[in-house]
View 1 (cartoon, rainbow, N blue to C red):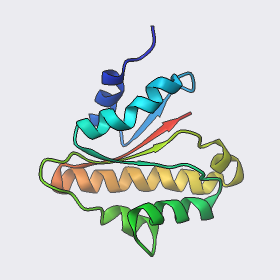
View 2 (tube, rainbow, N blue to C red):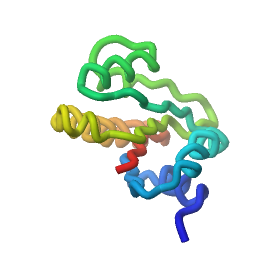
View 3 (tube, rainbow, N blue to C red):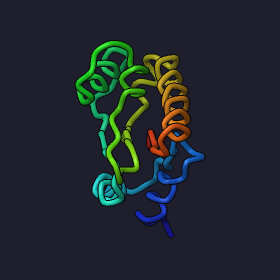
Length: 133
């Protein structure tokens, strides 16, 4: 028996895990249902598609956030509204980035973890990265 959507959402809502690793066998249907389920739980959801290297990661992240400058500053400055739980970035296929620039991938993980901790301690909101790996 595989995971259910409510189990995945609960993992995202757990403040102890800024990066939520999903098994590669997670069904396409479950992955496709995740954005709507997270939005129902008051998360802002960003889907990272087409990220193949450090440059495309920067371009995509800053593009969807409407920001310029360092990624860390853009993530640290994400707005939060009353009643919202925070932000979730869904990254279904990180293999290409990991293969082309392992350091950029590791830096993304570390940055998300650090900014999540700041957001959680200062305003009780999340910054999560969900990776299917």
